[in-house]
Length: 496
Image (cartoon, rainbow, N blue to C red; front, side, top):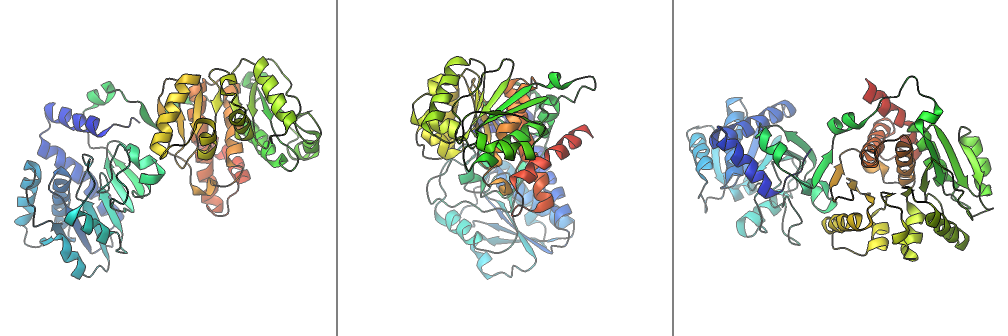
């Protein structure tokens, strides 16, 4: 799914209106989509408190209030009575609710004196067009609402949140439990500094102009199931082990055999036809007993001192690798003599950062840094938005794919496109989850997935397996090995 900027969202609304949908009817359509979701999810709630601004987001709120009241809910609408300079459509919907005697219209700060038992607060104050920090009465009201212990819903965008970046420090933002957003996910929903305000994201189709959506170009996208089903290649019944590629996982050191074991296991679970592990001899017993299907290649006693070159293989290097001087030399020699794309993670990235060898990465390789590893490679940034923009620049300069791990992992391509993953959960925030991802990516590339598609499919598969594992074991108790065991559930799901 495309991610549009605030300017592109405005153009999309305008194109829909110009194609024959009156703006007031578009507002009604958006309100109806929200009303239907709210009605189905909050059947037992007796009262809704709806906070409305002066723009079209406020107009959505007025229309939602009318629909809820007509369905038998009790509704109070809160406005800033010191500023009633409504937009044209908001004014029309405000006049409609003023005629309904059972809807009480109150000032923002009357919420201080109201019983909140069995109530829901709906924020419909500011929408996607906000480009300035909240202040005055609006800021005070949002700060107060954030202190209230009741369910909270934001309409389109939590008030105070910018859709394209980070608002000023200490500027208040409405803290929603659910955000009902229109047509598209917004970029700020997908970054840790801003997404924390949004709660659960529900995307509602309100029938915006499809022609403009197709025609509008954007660097930013989400990885959704529809895209994955286009990428996924079901297993060929007449294939053999050579059909599905050769994966070579390189890593492990004394005390860190588990990392390369998980990467190897994940590569096999993701479909690798032939799988080898290059690791020091101290890891041999662990790997051969835990994963007998993989072939072991010894390289050193406690640390890797050589990376064997094999033809027609895809290498995933880094899990548990360590930074011993023998290993540094072995990685350097390998990169000097290997021109095909590789997957690099963990200590492989740390070695490249410490020894300034980024120019040795083969073109169209995949690197998978978490934020700290990214900082070591490319330098410090002020926030995650700046980090993604720097990743776009570096992916283009080095002609590589950067899989920037975060709550919503971002795949950045050499042509500077960004794809945010929408699967996964906080139960995956445990050591070893990244090693699993390395194995998955290596396996998919070995199976002749286009590298960009392998990255998109890989991060989605990784996150979806994590979701299956969390549903079975809980986010707290799930382990990266549970994630590996759940990869098969994802393929079963895709094949249903």
